Figure 1 (cartoon, rainbow over the protein chains, first blue to last red):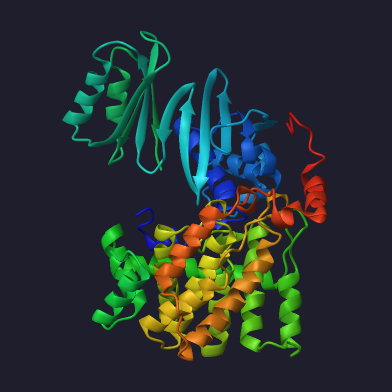
Figure 2: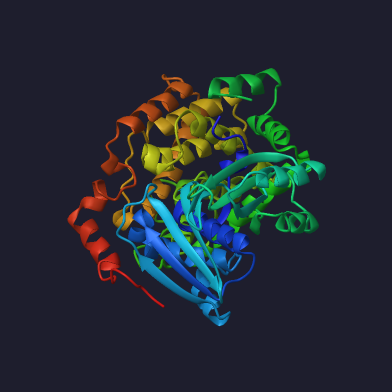
Amino acid sequence: MKYRSVFDIIGPIMVGPSSSHTAGAAKIGRLARSIFGKQPKQVDVFLYGSFAETHKGHATDVALIAGVLDFDTDDDRLPQALVLAEQAGVEVKFFIEDAVPEHPNTARIRLIDGGEQLEVVGISIGGGKVEIVELNGFELRLSGACPAILILNHDRYGVIAGVTQILSREEVNIGHMEVSRKEKGQMALMVIETDDRIAEQVINEIRDLTGVSRVLRMED
Amino acid sequence: MFRNVAELVALAEQKSCKIAHIMIEQEMQVAQLTREEVIERMGRNLDVMEQAVERGLSGVKSHSGLTGGDAVKIQQYVQAGKMLSGYTIMDAVSKAVATNEVNAAMGLICATPTAGAAGVVPGVLFALKEKLNPSREQMIEFLFTAGAFGLVVANNASISGAAGGCQAEVGSASAMAAASVVELVGGTPRQAGHGMAIALKNLLGLVCDPVAGLVEVPCVKRNAMGAAVAMVAADMAMAGVESVIPCDEVIEAMFRIGQAMPMTMKETALGGLAATPTGVRLKQEIFGTEPSKVVSS
């Protein structure tokens, strides 16, 4: 069964006009902000495929920025997101890409605050459902349906075990886990989806582990 | 969990209850929520639908300028008593158009089952609110019944224009509304299934051909037709008319038609009305002047 809840059919409540191009775009922007952990000073948005073709008419650009401002899909401030971003001192740039993406509804969002930078690629797969498929060049599959932590670490033995030992001791159940690296022995990314939100002090403990360079939290 | 309309109708008959109640109980189990929580959540959807109808009837205009203002025209025509087809049908049509004009204008709506088809179910429901004066509880039940039939379509065919054409969006919405009307006016679960089948049969093959790729033309007016088809199908079912082809087979047919439909007719804006000279010109006017790289900074 692809659909189980009646609210997948009657719902979601959203700002129009398109569940995939507006509501989905807002969710991608909001997930990116959630991973960045704060409001960025600068946002570069790269639009691909159908997003590149129809973003004006479906307000995909506006919705992505609304998400970066932490607005939900039913937030009535969504249509004014570009003006509100400017007022909040967030510099926004859009780039229309010619490249043909794997999924027709693809956006790349670069969030910047001084020296801090995060690059996220999201796809809108229909009916308001989305996935994050790339983070700082690492491939991943993340829906945002569960709380998750993202751990950038050195690719060496024992780091994964160190993280899972802490989660096990804290009785945090892992629903889904992915590890990936660009090159053997270099930087790697762990994506861990959990049933419950992980406490801040547990995240700090993971952050202090040898071999861990950065821990990001994502919440729905 | 019911897998098809036959099982849904059989469950309601066995328990001698409404289809809405089967849906509420299933949702309580799936989402692990209490009856009050499930009903309250649907109540919020109902409130958003009502606000969208009211906003659309006061007049909106979309960003592209392609749609807006027709709901007001239709409602004025209805109030002047000029309609040929009947008050409640045209009232439903104006309210369906109102909702979809609000959607096109980036207003708040409830996707039912999608944003592009969000007008049909509320259009019909709020026209009947005026005619029959149902309780809030009955209106919320109307949405659960619509959701139950919509779940069957979503799981056995599709509710996405990109996957199955507009039959999957406005067609599904119209069929869901027809079934809910039958139940609201006291029809049996079996009659609701026939109402659903009659409406869906008449929207089979409907292509998804949005001009300039926007959910405006022809989508807003197709929501109007979806509402009218739902009303007529419900009346036919209440008159005792049955669908010769069982509802689940109609849904199966819709799935196969969607698969056989060429890509140009499934939300790609490459065929149908989108490919007419006017459709191509409008796309050029709306998007053609855009610079190719940095848009704004």
